[in-house]
Every structure is written in C-alpha cells, then in structure tokens.
Image 1: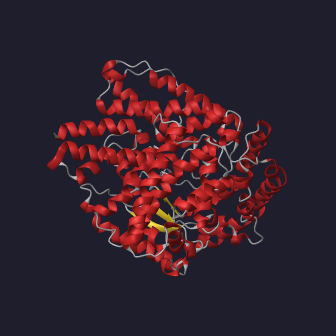
Image 2 (image 1 turned 45 degrees about the horizontal axis):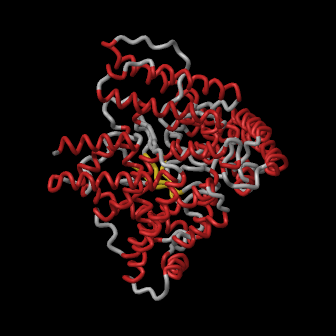
Image 3 (image 1 turned 30 degrees about the vertical axis):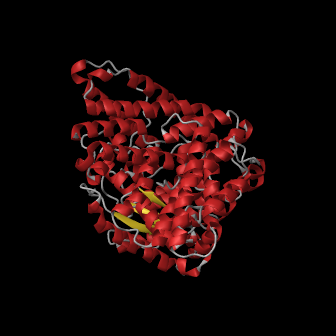
Length: 591
C-alpha cells in the first residue's frame, strides 16, 4: 500500500496533487485544443504543488521545502471552490477535437475531478487525525527528503519552525468536527495519545524531528554541523514540543472523550451515502456493497479449498483452524530479531529481481530500496508499504517493512508481500507511470486504488510465473495474502453497511486467514479508519486476471504474458473500465 507520511492530514485538507487555481474560462480553437489542454493540466499541477508542499517535496520539487499545507478553513474552502471551477473548465474543451492520447488524459482528469467535487459534501477535513498518521507524525516527511546540503537542513528547520501553526489549524478542524458530529471512532483514537506523547520529549535530541541531525552527509561542511544541531535543538524545545503539548492537552482531555463509540462510517451524518460513494470511488465500479460482500464470500470459499490442499500436501494432522494456529505460532516461521527480519526482506528482494524478465519485456529505470518503518509509527502500522520515488528521479522508490515484534511477522508471508509492495507490484506501477511518454504530470503520478492495488495483488500471483513459489509454505503465504484481500470484501462491507461489530470482523478474519493477531487487529482498525479503500484490491485483481484470461483465450499461441503485463502498465493508473477498453483494443491489434 502506498503511503504518505502525513497522509491523513493532507487528505483532510484536500491537498491532493491535482488541485488547481481559479483561472479564466477556456475558449479553445480546434487547431490548438491539445496544446491548451496541456497548458490547463500544467496549471493544475502547479497549483497542486503550491497547495501541498509536502507532496511537492516528495515529487522532488524543492521550492516549497520550508512550509506545510495550509489547513485553515478558508484555505480548504478556496481549494474546494477551485476544484468546482476546474470541473467546469475541463468540460469546456472539445473532446472530439483531441488526439486519442489526449482523450485518455481528458477522460482521466474528468473522472478524478468529478469525484473530487462529489466528495466535498462529506467534509472529510473535519476528521484530520488518523490512528495511522496525521500532524502527530509529521516528522515522517523527512523520510522522503534528500538532506544532502546545508540548504536542505535549513529548509527542514524552517518547516520545523512553521509546524505550530499547522498544529493549531488541525486543532481548529477537530473542534469544528466535534460541533458537526464528524468525529472518528474512539477505538481508533485511543491509539493516538501514545503517538503524540512520542513528540513530547525532554531531550530535544530524542525528538523524531532531530533524526536528520544525528548524521550529516559529506555535502554539509563540518563548520555548519554544530550550528545546525544547536538550532534544531532550540526549535524543538521552544516551538515543536510546546505545540505538541497543546495538541496533547486538547486531544486527551477534550477530543478523545467526544469521539464516537460506533465503528461504522454509516453512523456519521450522511454516512451511508458516504460509504456508497467511497466504494464506487475506490473500486472505480458501480458495484453495490451487497454485491461486493457476495463476491467476497465466494472468494473466501474458493481460497479455503486451495488452502486445504496445501494442508494435506505438507502432511499437517489437524483441521484448517489448527493449521492456521500452527502457522501463527511455530517458532520456525519467524525471525528472532528485527535485524534478521530486515536482512531477510532485502534478500528476498534480490531474489525476485533477476526473475522479472520472465514476465516483462519492459523493466522501469527507477531503482528501489528496502527500509524499516520508523519506530514511532510501527506498532500502529500495517506490515509494509511502498513510497513512490520522486518524479524528477532524485529519490528512489522505497519498500518499507515493519520490524516491530518480529515474532509476529511470519516468513511465509514475505514473498507475496515483497512482490506486492516492491517489484513487480507498486514499484513497477509507479515507476512505469513516470515513464509515460508525453503524458501530463497528473497522469504520470495518478493513483487509482483499484488499478494500483489490483495490479499489486495480481503481481503476487506472478510469483508462480517467475518460479518463486517452489516451497509449499510460500504458496500458502500467497493464498493467505489473497484470502486477506477476499476477507476485506466481507468485513469492510460488513462493518460499514451491514452492522457488523469490530469483534465479529476480527473473528471472521481469524477464522479464514493465518495472519498473526496483531496484524489482523491493525487491519480491521485500518478498514474502520479508511472505509471502502480495502475493497479495491480484490476487485481490481479479479478484473485484471479476467482480462488476462480473456486475452489468452482470444490470442491462443500468440499470447505472451510479458506483452500482456506490459500492456496493463503502459496506460498508467486509470479506472478499471478504461483499462478494459485498452486491453480490448490491444487484443484486437494483436489478432
């Protein structure tokens, strides 16, 4: 799952990369319709960078490295107004006058903008803090910054000095959320006080914001280092810690007691309509919650039958529930230390790399690396996530792995997890997107969850084509990960549309998948905190797998999985319906 270090706050403030400023209406002439369209896209991209300095920094744009997004109510309304104006502007272009490539760009932007405007009614910014991230973990942005020169450090210091304003703005949003009845579930928010407490340090050198100052690269002169460290300690002591103390007092004493007891997003004002919107937005389909729930039940039954075959193959004496317990608890399935776990993840990545040529003709140029998830968020974070590389090539993509409690991180899950989060999963999807020829930046960096996560789940199955599942326990790991995504269809719709309790969802997950209990609880809480997002994985993977089967049946001996996989990635991230049209045209051309 791709991650943004302060994704909850950025999402709440509507600070997406593809937001635009209000400008004059388009009056295009047929001869230059495409040029005008691309100028429009460039304006949108530029405004997005200004509105999301964090996003700009992660894209490799250094102009805004000294600031945070403006989370004030006037700024949020200005963004929303500009989005509405942008939607009207895109409708002013003559689609029929555009080239096929620009028609795809037009359709993709229109889809994004229509959904962005439609979601304004739900006022997501009134819940700016997530148990998985927010202003309380703003230091995580440093993971994606270069810190190569003195200027980089001075920009980080400026950002540190500006943080109290951002924290005050987030507190205002939480207060408004309380007034409007827009508050998150208490069971999730109970995790946040510990995250805030990690920022309230007596020794500034122990602050997460101080990490970049612990070690300097060669590009920072020795003469600058002591002064930079002294200034960082001063800013932390005088600005950052006091600001977090203010947040701590408000959150613990006033906000947390007013969070809601229920877990369903449908409990919120207009909540059921919001869930229906989220399901459609994330899956890029018209499937209803009931339809998705039924698909999940069928997939769970199918995968359980495959798991039974593995249980018999390895000679386990006992039923599937006992086999799950064996996989969760036998010490042979776990590394003993975080260091050993990290080394093993790195080794698996190196094992995958040379096999990629079996399933692709095109290998992206951008490299990737493996990093541990920061300690201060690891206990409340999923098993792993991917952070895309900078669009200018200044930073590689990174596969972040969770080393917290290695006794809960089974070896048998490491291969499918690495195929999903690194290569050929998210890294290929994002890196190939950056290589789209002549595409506007919003297309090169677009992220439709059903496409991106559907591809990554499909990529787990490419391990069979690459010969990486020679061990039955690794194959069990692949099935466990596929089951994990099938279970999501059932429990997400169950909790948010069918009245399931958190306990029922956890029990259903445990009954059908061998994942460790810590992971299961974190996953269920993630589905509570981000309703509908988890539906996109299996729906996307099913559609891509169906397209592969369709292509193979139509092309017969002409079918080559390398060409098919390249064809799926060559569109960049798009809605599933758009991908299907592309593959149909690709099949027709091949025939």
